[in-house]
Amino acid sequence: MVQDYGNYSDDQLLHLVQLNDELAFKEIFDRYWKILYAIAYNRLQSIHVAEDIVQEVLTMLWVRRADLKINLLGGYLSTAVRYSVFREFKKSIQKNKLHDALKINTEDYINAAVEEDMRYNVIQAQLQNEVNKLPQKCKLVFQYSRELGLSNREIADQLQLSTKTVEAHLTKALKHLRTAFKKTLSSFLMLFF
Image 1 (spheres, rainbow, N blue to C red):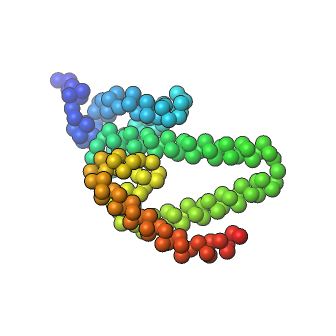
Image 2: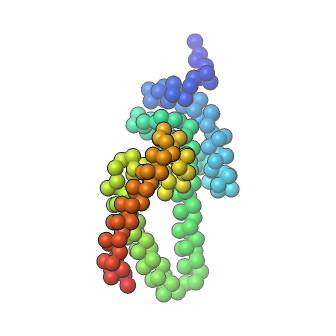
Image 3: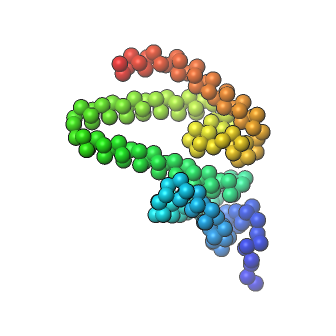
């Protein structure tokens, strides 16, 4: 007897995927491909890059199927696509910086860019270190806001929290980061200036 996966809920399909059911995965693929593609394409305006991102996200769903803990499949997949779009923008910016540096082709510019990247990497490492010190929920809310650019409402929906709770977590995270960076700012300035 052939199962009609189209009548299954996302939770049922996800459970079957975790049990290595390839037809359940195909149903998820078919169910979400167009939506995820639209999200990626609307932000990137590139057919090939949007297709690659959606393919990568859905492939990772299959590859990591046994380890994933997903509450809302649609939200999880769209968030993963948005995060991949963000990474694609970041790569594009880095490529543009490199292209500009090669175009100008001066050692001074390259040295300045390297120094700027070092500063950026130090700040990013410090920021990540401080973010890792946050309580788990607070950290997750901050990452959804900062890295994925989700609104407080989207974060609340994704994590099944109230908007007020999301705002409280963001306030706590920002207060912690302000305090942490205030302490290290003077030593950081001495290091680079």
